[in-house]
Image (tube, rainbow, N blue to C red):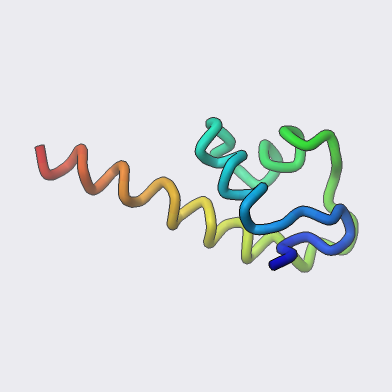
Length: 63
């Protein structure tokens, strides 16, 4: 599924950027050398960041 239609970024690419260390929307765009245009994707990107980062934080808290 496309997350950012303006830049053609798919959900898989956004998740890969987060797994690679991008912890903000701006860093996701920077990872692909693009910038937000209409900004409709920002909420979805934030959700992906939370989904990808939260499991790691939960594992650390459980230890």
